[in-house]
Image (cartoon, rainbow, N blue to C red; front, side, top):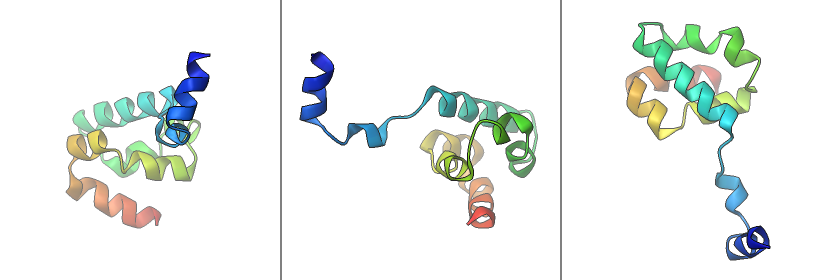
Length: 83
């Protein structure tokens, strides 16, 4: 019943939830970039292609922690390429 009351307090909260899958992929992208790999190559990995759709990848590139870790100058060209 607690979940139902939480739903009525904020019925649109599910729009803002992140899946564990997306969390793991974001961690993977950041780790691989810290190892020196270019973002474009990372996003073409089978690990990512098998787990995220194109729209989920676009959402990944908007995540603040990803942008902060990789840098706006790295993420922006990839966003534009995928648009």
